[in-house]
Length: 423
Image (cartoon, rainbow, N blue to C red; front, side, top):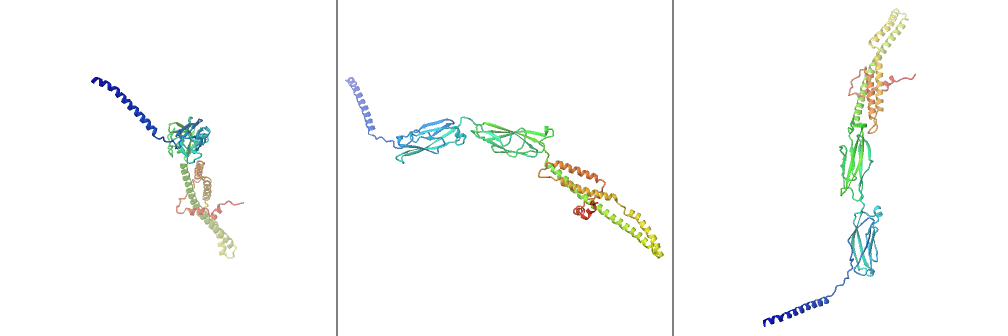
């Protein structure tokens, strides 16, 4: 009996299991059927790509789709770049990335253009939606950035001058971010060069060109190496030719010292002229006094010799002899100093000549190119005049009285004696 009962229970369990499963499936179907379905009523764009990338000479054709019937809606764009269009009826987004847009500057590479796109119901203005996407253009052709100095490839400057020029840059796809400077000879620039639009400035010393340099010139190669963020490099080379030039500050010091020597020597000659002229004037007055005395004695003797008085006649016979005797006394006391007269005339002429040379050799402008020639002329003429006056005893300069000597030299009465008279 036990065995029979066990065998008869298996079909019953199988049947009950099947009935339970069928009931579960039926209940699930009834539940799904009874739940209400939610309608898709909010307007939205279902296939918008938020980011577009295009390269030059490529085209874009992308149809936007909404979750409602398209014939009742209107498409539009805001802040769109030039060339980007959308079909107002079906939402077809098109663009032709022509190279002319970029060459004219109306479009730029690697710039994110934010474009606003919207769709609106023609019958219900409230039924609309706005969104945004980004479009970027890139160039498959690499345009390298270049350094362009504001001077030619070869320039010539003189010692003592300052070489100056700007480092301009022509930017390609990627601008130059830094610049390294190198030179064939070690030089010290005024400014530091690190980027575009920096100024190269170098004050060239006067002793830069050496005596053993060929042609009295020295060539310096200047290298400006620029690189972008991807280490793409461009090198600009400037050939700087430095010519030998005079050390103007030193030559100016030599000129100023020589002019000071001129002025001091002129003052010394004016003192000498005043001393010699006064001696000649004193001698002349003494000789005139002797001559007047001698003439008076001769005339008085002549007058007295005609007198009836014997005593007066005797005196009249003696007086001419006295006048004659005064002549050797005059020569002994106040000899005629011809050498002094010649010397004072020579000194006066030399003073006038020195003043004229000093005036003609004056410097013109801040940097007179003839400073060396004028300095040599001043030195030569001064030495020549000093040799001419080597036998003239020069007076020591009285520092307290330089204006008095100059005033005496320019006195019209004094100048009248040495002025050439017309025949």
